Length: 316
Image (cartoon, rainbow, N blue to C red; front, side):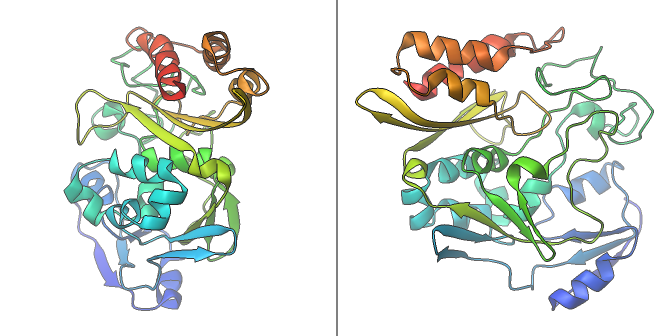
């Protein structure tokens, strides 16, 4: 790891002033940033510790739950209001990482974590996300964990956050010290610039996440398919909010993880369900709509059928 300057900010003004400079990175739990620096994947001249800032806690506001960006994943997962009013969020957080990591990792840091693509994490391998213009090793390499939807000729890495998938289904908003950003607009598609992952500007600080409280959120579920039961990232995942009236789907919001560079939401999937009985035929139609346009690679073609089966399981 290269040498770096470390500052513990005790006021938001201090953190923002320091972070406006090039080469500066915020750090909270540090569960991702420090590993990337140790592996030589990221280099930062200055880390600004923001743990002392008043940005934690869960607040029940008017029609929404406000989640402080420095709230620890385990605290939010166990919060009674979150568990009762939006179980998909609690389930997604509990499915992430390990208990030890959940006790350290912040919500804001989880949203900002980098891909687990092994080519990105290996500083000796070409990777457009790490070094623009160097190539994507995964496209013709070992791509079992990689994207079947939403990728580009420059990158097929998948986003690793379970939290982001649940928040996408919940139609959450990321709040910074400057603006409000719909979660659907927060992550950038890879295109020709996969090194640009979010719409955040240099020094922009996530302060909280706003999640609407709706009857639909209360009827929600998160399913994660992974290689082992703990401390493993999703091969595929599904966040589902579905409401039935007399056996017919009245509302549906679905988001998927492990299959795209961003949390993936497909209006076509929801249209295939809404207004129809939730039966084998409609679930099959929704699955077919989901993978229409998929571009499987040599080692990840199994994800096409796996994500369809995961969707069927979560809707059963």
